[in-house]
Image (tube, rainbow, N blue to C red; front, side):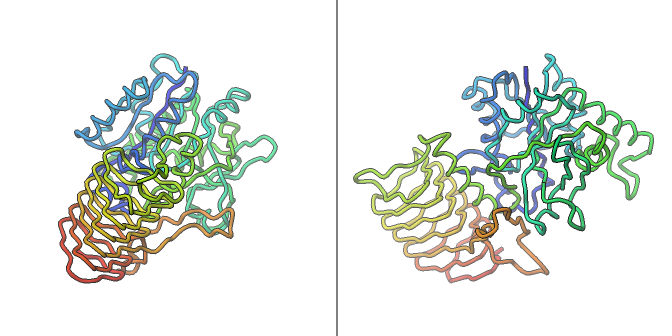
Length: 420
């Protein structure tokens, strides 16, 4: 018997993902046509012996989240439950707080997945490795180049046994090119070190009102409090993968993740990819179109385009490397490139919306997607264009590398600006 836990965080996190997280919780943001965490649930549901999937986070259980859970349970025929933390408890605090629910039924092991990662989720391979040689902690790892590795948890392994000898979260100097993917397989005994951290926090008097201390004894950071402390003690091992993987921390990384998932649909969900049919729009590459969307036959879509529920795409529209969220309207001869068009927005005739692609270096096989914030030194960085919800762009307007926040109607061209 197996279980899976998906850590979805809370509204106080994900600031680099704004303004996309203003309308829906970040884990429900559609990537390649489905909510971000649905990719996780689909992967977990395919593992033989999976009995239950638990979501742990600090979001209020609103209508959108409740409806998603109901649909997920019906679609995957598995219990999918949300466990709300009483306070933000870090990456490990929720696991310890809800340990009884996780261990109910006596699972042999349980997966732990961070919600803000894109992956092909080699869970069955991790399970096979765990069953060959059981250890409390098994981490999924991949490689990054020397510079980008500093942005992740870095792993030093024994190349023969794959034991984690040293672990540092976001080091200041180069440690290793093996990085933590945020996907784990834990044995039930893995909760014992979390208990030790909790008890130590209590003894140290780390209370919420103690200045400069980590807020609350219940808050546990898996990476710093557990992995770094236990590395080299024969308890933590790494399973390396060369499959797709990326963090989803910013709008640009959401577009990149959408591209990765759309490409993977060729193997996992070919029925989700639009096909070029006589009398239909011209499809180039991998494109997702929601069944309720209305797309004019003369539109040209792709590669790497996702069109949401109830979207209207007019005659002569050109879409490339973009996400169009539900209820948006693209009027005739609109051109949208490297952009995210928000919920209920309208882009007028002959308007051009274009962002700057910020993909990993194609000449570096170890390069990862940079998830920079939208601003640096008080200036908006060149990035994909984001149109907030219910934005109206009149005809013949040019938008380049800008962020347009909700409820705006524009009447002129903008370049590399934020419109509040």
